[in-house]
Image 1 (cartoon, rainbow, N blue to C red):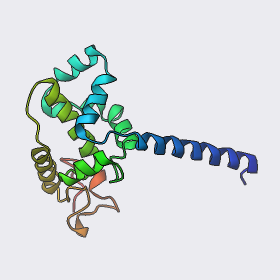
Image 2 (cartoon, rainbow, N blue to C red):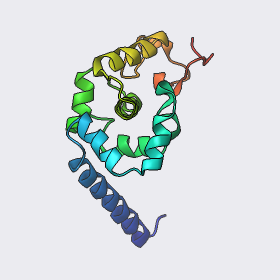
Image 3 (cartoon, one colour):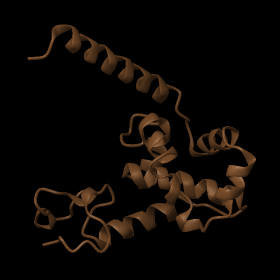
Image 4 (cartoon, rainbow, N blue to C red):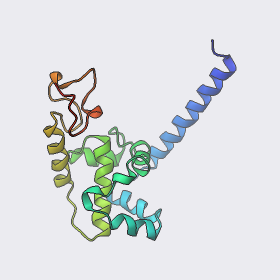
Length: 163
């Protein structure tokens, strides 16, 4: 049985974390352009040069679990509760990982003076998910495409566990 004081401390820590997350989401960028401005403003010139020198389609790969995870959680990219998430969702980018990936691709395009289209990015992600039997939000197109209770979010390209 858990000590009541320990339980209270766990509850207070959880409450503090949820409050911090809510505050971060309240201060999330309203638009994709504002998100890019913020990332640029908080990055060193060296980091931006290194990021810009990567291949466009691999631009955010190394940042997925660092800055990407922070963006998905702090900017509410998993849900449509922030303006940025709604902007990306309205374009058809529905999965949280895809949303942070779109931000990275847009950043790469800005740094390399290349055009960027949310609609084209959304079409790329939709094609990716459909190729693996999933909807653009990562859910299975058909229930029979599930494997041991897993959904499309736990399977990856080339995964041989499909039914």
